[in-house]
Length: 191
Image 1 (cartoon, rainbow, N blue to C red):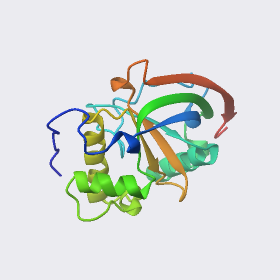
Image 2 (cartoon, one colour):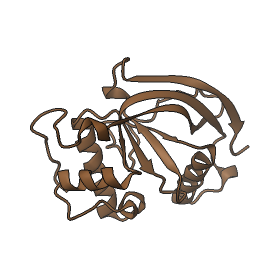
Image 3 (tube, rainbow, N blue to C red):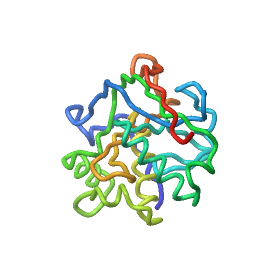
């Protein structure tokens, strides 16, 4: 899928009433004893919402169960058992972020689909599936969202139906739009 380049930053395609914010606790898994905000790998990693070597994404889940599900999905993709992986901790972060695109909301998905010239809607299934065309679509949405100045995307979890993830683009956020702090939680995940 060819990337589109919007003609102006913060175009009126999505009115500000469809641009949200997020304040709360999120979860992620990190190497054992690593700082909760450890980001050493995010620029090299490839994912549904980032391009490896081009821009990174801090992937978090809005619930601890969502983060556990994402970890199980990660292991399954590598055909690993938890005990065969390096020791990992489940940690929490406290987040305050503005300019959030909430793709868990159908109204917003429909507007994004219209803006990107897709037929009708952006089905939630396409944001969860691993078909190469669906993964390319997610990357196209991420490219567009970043170009429009969105700092984070709330997306449906590909691992657990009904769960949501908060995907944060820390490289484009100024301090007035993003605050990340280590949360109070740390639990062994696979040891």
